[in-house]
Image 1: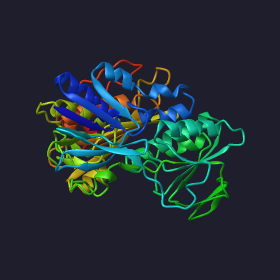
Image 2: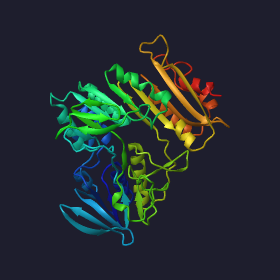
Image 3: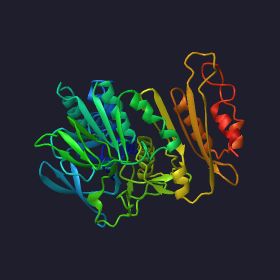
Image 4: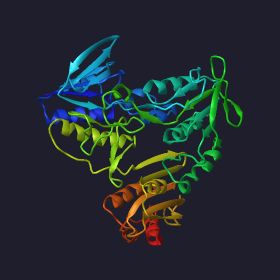
Length: 442
């Protein structure tokens, strides 16, 4: 059996490794358009913020290491066309194209950056942050002593992490977000409102409800124009989201969402025969909504990649679904979420209630006590937990892990209120904030 995988990052390489273990006789070939595989883009903000200096640490494995396992990885090979009727691919390498046949195919081409619809993005000093070379280029630009003012467009996970990286680099930072609050897609406003003062205390200039219209400068950026004013800047980093990298299969008839994400079922199968998909180019099954959704997270890409690897090699496994569990660190704050936000519950027409409270991370008499804030979303009729969000200086994210388990098991707020969480004075209070929120929920 010949298995071809398009894309050599998290989902693709997880699938390749697992498929080879399940079916050692399978002929597995991976085509990767870049010259790097097993690359984790999540490390890029920390790389440009000088938390580590070796960019290669973000690429876990090499083609040679996979060759030792019997998996052929061909870098700088771009698949430009898929003929599902003939089960054939057209591959481009060094300006020449050739066709290859497959028995089973996995599409794991990831995502590409979404750039704002503004003029001047081609100017020097304007960057996005998606590939390793992006990080290297930005880090080199930051080393220029004349680069002092940095503008970040967008305040999602990457935008906030880049803002912190620029603070560590000693730059003057301006953050522009067109929504009325920071990180609007991930967190409800009760949680996200705590991030703005944390950044402002560190000197970040924040513009909400403001959109960039133009990058100004001759060859190099000198300022940006928004719908409200003009601001001088030496460097611009666009952190305005990603979209599935699936344009090359648009004419195949494969089922996709409006944003181009390949729709897959709980086994990773697409609407095309003998074609699977996983990662940021595709949907993922949502455990609560019971439908495919687009949530481009590394955790989902790795899990679905592994599962597709098993299924493409002959098994018949299903994924129970994601909760979209995610987290972010912003200077001294950490925030996490799992399950449905209030906005998502509204969009799903669920009859829900919420509770939002503040408490402390641990007992009063232990050093380092700080505030914690929690929001729960739960069903009105039976108090079953739908979602949870936490933010604080200490202990927020690991509590989200506990709440993810609770939601996965169908727990109610009443059960959460009496759940037996670990207690010692340096770690929590006898009634943890999760217990308190569960007991307060009406």
